Image (tube, rainbow, N blue to C red; front, side):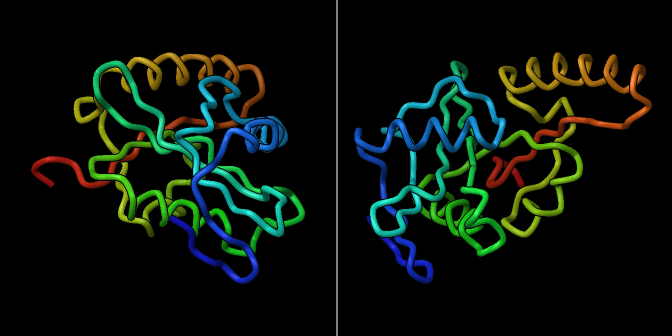
Length: 158
């Protein structure tokens, strides 16, 4: 599978992409755990990995769209959106994701919707609760309002 976005090709990652994937995820300050190259789609610009994204499986069968990252010098060029759209096209529903509340509108355009805790798979609900407890403490100290949301797409009965 490969698709062209401008001069960037989207393709399945290979073992040689692992270091570049990890570097992108760290630069984006995303969760650096469970970065198995076999689950990734990468954006390749002449041999340079400039974007990446994966579907991460959870123990209860939920599958999470995760680790969407684009190199700083290639952001705002549609690469992240192309990665998301490609993963959606390749992966059967349902898909879930976590995002900061301020990113909800970005994922709405891909058909995701914000879920209430009762709609979340157990694995995601636990992480959602824990993360928002931490954000609550952070918000109390800083006066900021940060919140993690869980979104889903292609849910049964939807």
